[in-house]
Length: 298
Image (cartoon, rainbow, N blue to C red; front, side, top):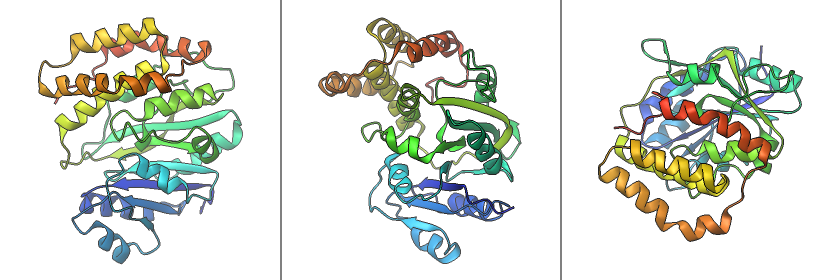
């Protein structure tokens, strides 16, 4: 069942054991996909372990933590029409990569396919899955699943050329909700994003993470994305909604301060979305206000 259509791209930072588990699982896939790992400046022996235990993996070592831009670096090396992103604590189920590639082959205007996320070790669905499955965005009749306004990098297969044409992940956002800006730029380029319930990604959340820093970046990046792409009215509503609902602590204060400090940059790069893309985002606003999967806590 070897499938030459998709390359798996993984970014990692100081999660050697989790990464090696992921690479073991990817090596077992019947598709036998090529794998590219960007080691974002790990100091725990990650690069040496990958070179020793997985010599067929293409290993990139930029020497510092590039965040999501590590994916951009890897995609430069991709030679297949499709790219599957994967975190160092997640892995694709057998057949899922081929299934996503089949959808992309079949539908030329489809830009991304996001799979169902199963949380390990319990095998339960991630809470975000219900929101993906019940997306209120209307799509064309040919779309093979619910239309999405964004995607989750660790569970998505994309067209390699579309990713490159849209500019990849913005270096300013680093990590934390970095997909949202790229997703709307793909939509503005005419690509549709969909969810595929019959495809699966497994996620075993790593304990090696800083939840407060991730929350800071998540709030900050949401504010940046909102003011970079949304009209003033929706941007103001989203900002006020965040101000009302995020925890009153130093992490939230830092997020708003970092977002405000970058106002000159935001104004220089601000590019409001086409009306048809903005209308899809407005349909997502009620769900964002009540979501239990997207709360900025921790």
